[in-house]
Length: 62
Image 1 (spheres, one colour):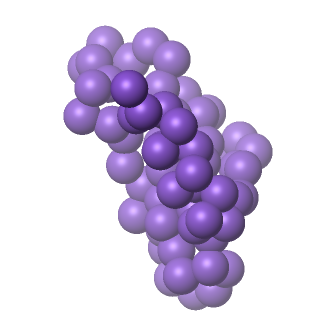
Image 2 (image 1 turned 90 degrees about the vertical axis):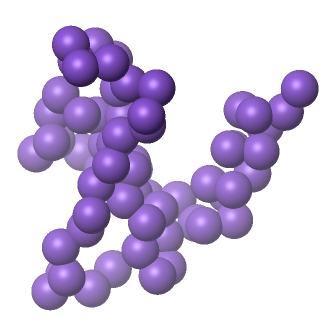
């Protein structure tokens, strides 16, 4: 990851305004970064773009 460029974090449109148990995601050139929205300064999970696409595919499969 290029540390000079800030990541653009976003939450799902399904996340409620009251907070709750949400994650935030930021896509970068070489990876997708995932963090707990309630602990923005906490640990970040880094996964490949292919791994993220696979997870999203499994989560949305009918």
